[in-house]
Length: 208
Image (cartoon, rainbow, N blue to C red; front, side, top):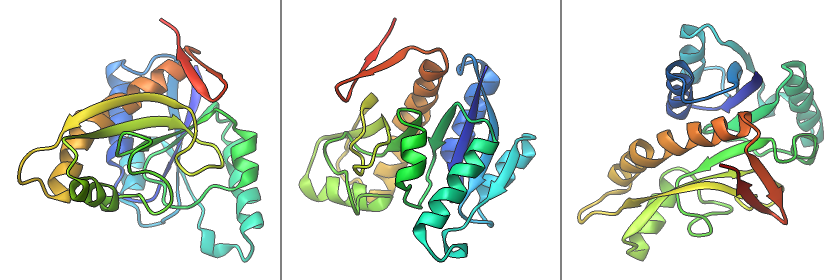
């Protein structure tokens, strides 16, 4: 059974999707053992506590130097015996130490079909505003491993979602969460926990 540590900053809707998936058996051979938040007031912490999941808080502003924060976050994750780290709306940049310590063991969910609408500055509603301003007919979500290039790690899963006439960034965000993010993130986590994801030349191979 693999230990899953989830990093959050806000409401925790993707965390809730993971909790529900674990309870329903969608996530196989994995258990959420800790939720770490960059924000002490994040509602995601309440979700964790209501489900008897260990929690911790680490704030970037409590560390004068980024390297000190990077070291502290790495040590905190290590102390939780993490096999997999899931970024579920974690709004703080990860440093070299934690990324190298957990190479191909950190998963992120991005609300677009990478390589579209990704990279620096593309987060939250910004992604959906950009997609709508471009007039795309399909958007969606991508689950990928994290490396030191923003949104540049190996892609694990993607799911397309139709863009409808009259969509706002908010309505598109909601549809992508419901139809894509909350479905493929738990599936990718389950694949990882079953050792079914291999990475070669920055490309993933999913085993049947």
